[in-house]
Image 1 (cartoon, rainbow, N blue to C red):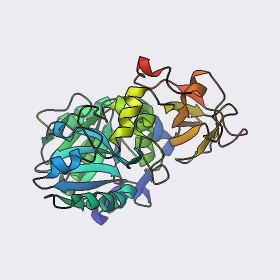
Image 2 (spheres, rainbow, N blue to C red):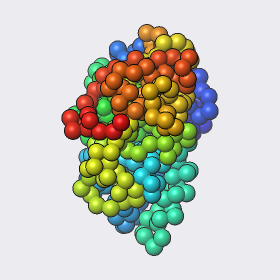
Image 3 (cartoon, rainbow, N blue to C red):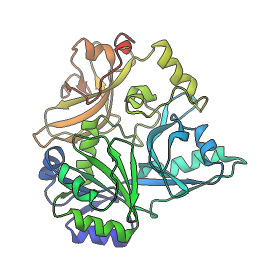
Image 4 (cartoon, helix red, strand yellow):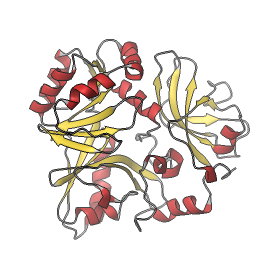
Length: 355
């Protein structure tokens, strides 16, 4: 986080820890505002990786799960980078600003991503760099805040993944309970925008934004969940993060086999647990009826709910969910998951896959 921007946030009341804003003094109220009203969030806990050069599209096309050719100055996309075994090494949002492409991902995954991707560059005319200090980034959610943001641009993105530019800003519409956007720009533009929006939106910490991602069914990887899931397990194909027509890329055979042979046995669900304990990403789930040696699943992300308890995304064995079995955090004494509805449905043909 740039020191000047950090000082600006602290003057606005931010409490920072390990490079991210935890809250602005009222964490419970901030979470409530995220679900019910308007919030304004610093997104410095997400990093940026810049990809540029004449071979950028061809290079990325051979590495990522989505069809990079569909990305333009007007459209972004979610995507993933896989191991040869089809396991997610990273999930990110890819967008274009001027002549460069940017991958927005958790900050902790930027350096590992750079190291892996540089191994594949070879003779390609592509440069990869950490761009975390190049553009500031904030999140805006809520009908009033989004309307106020619209005053800055001639055109606003109306659907998830759409992008608009203007006044030094790049605005990307993302899925959410309310109109929601990620905004990128230089320090002067973002500071001015923050001050413009703060009168209608409550400044909130990174956990409030994570809570919105959870309710939108949008997974984020952490160092503890790298290589834990294949894309379909975290519903990446259901949020337009996988192309099944683009051709070959690293790990593609595993993804295609799951899609066309019906071998998916686990998928991500939205759930709630009672209590104050927040399970960390990667925490194992327990069920007495789970597959021997396989476990019931893993937590993807979890955040406190403003109404008490904890909301979470978890990858769970499909049959345990469908049969109504008790799935718990950790062991038989752990908190029980109460499953909730995601904002998107599962394909009908997938309901009978796996056991």
